[in-house]
Image (tube, rainbow, N blue to C red; front, side, top):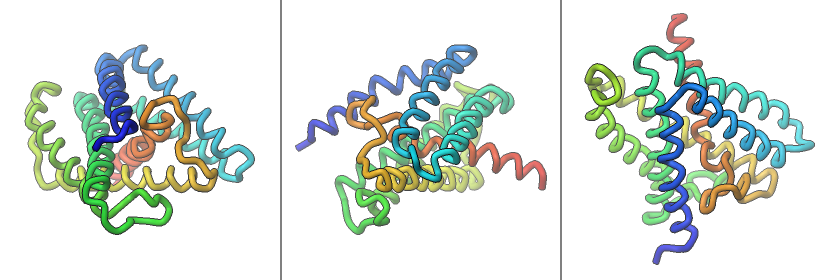
Length: 219
């Protein structure tokens, strides 16, 4: 039987996802206001989690880097910026969804003591759903870009890497929640907790992608 918390989680996602996509696709000042709002809420949640902790300042600096990466990739990453941006979000969401659903259904051995709810089945499920939804997304790439982008071996490896970063980001945030003796970073989103609970993978994926591309150009 599906619990009330899962109903809340599904309902929150059905409301938040279209709203978020609207601001992302619309771009311009609306997108900037949207990510600034998310940043201030996430920063507030981090402050509550880490006040008087030695890593407080570093966390705030990382959030600034992360949200700058979000802004930069959406606006200044060439003709395929929207396609790439949506792909990164899709991989993060599907990895999280796969981890949650496969972990709940299959369960099995725990992945790490840092986050007791994470399982190996959930991690594999995250990879499976990330690949599955990415295949569908690439098939419709011509609706977002002027050309049809083919999902090849490099793109497949890219999806796996981004899914790994997203899942590791989730575990890292869980680690800091455990240090603060918190189950959630906040309660602004029913069924999900706080903003940081919802974007924990994304705040690592976007700076990783930006820095990785910068280093590739230097080589």
